[in-house]
Amino acid sequence: MIVAEKKPIEEIIEEIKDYKKILIAGCNECVTVCEAGGKKEVGVLASALRMYFINNGKKMEIDEVTLERQCDHEYLEEIRNQIGQYDAVVSLACGVGVQFMAEKYRRIPIYPGVNTSFMGVTEERGVWTERCQGCGQCILARTASICPISRCAKRLLNGPCGGSTNGKCEISKDLDCAWQLIIDRLKELNRLDDYEKLLPIKDWSTERAGGPRKVVREDVRL
Amino acid sequence: MRLQYPEAIRIIRVPCTGKVDILHILKSFEKGADGVYIVGCLEGDCRFDNGNLRARKRVQQAQALLDKIGIGGERVQMYNLSSGEGPLFAEIAAEMTAKIKEMGPNPLKEALKKQAA
Image (cartoon, rainbow over all chains, first blue to last red; front, side):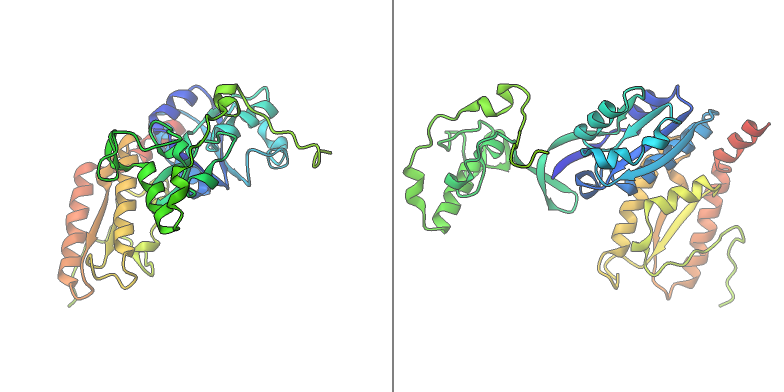
């Protein structure tokens, strides 16, 4: 999922303080799971903002909505008839949702309510960690299903480096060395011979380095 | 026991304090409550393992948020006691009431009055 963190409420207040009528729009997908921008967080933010503005003597109308997704036309269309009555929208979706809503509703300012962090997993309740950087050419088949691009600080393809100590990375004693994890898992899978096979130089043009990316599937396009 | 406790307190019963959500706490203030306190079982004694620990987290979340928006995080508190501690329940009720009285009413009420005027 895409992992995000709630923006500090002070930052949101600063952005919207001059408006009179605001819509707070949550998203039912990733940001709900990582407890940053789902229906619950929409309710909490709306309630807190209402109280803040009343307490500061300002009339501010704040409504709530939570869409199934904000990265697809059909769900964003659901608010077409109501969005015109608002001065601005605070979207609690990831950066993708904020932008897609802004592309669709060009005359209404859309503000982000979360900081989009990374693609990752819920390691335990309240702890999310990165697993994928969307490099565009997955090499997990060769690395015992552990990604050195997202989990090695140096993104080494043939590791580990000299900074790996007792299974930890030199940048933090709390961070596992991705290559140690790979080697351990190859051992468990009885595939340690694969470690000797060198990974070729990676084509980074499919990664962000190659500019904004696009996937076109002619076989499913209408 | 016939213990007395301040009449300003309204008890809302929940099956477990783990049911109490930050939204319940915030809505109470939005509706004009001057203070909210959650009374859970003793830590380590939760029938559902961690209901009261979850409640404590939510109280902390609410406190942080209420501080930021100028209502005052101190208006929310978490207490733990067993069902056999009636006198302590009454004591806590008096303590919380005194604390809130000292803090004064929910500032939203005053602000709304001003807005209406």
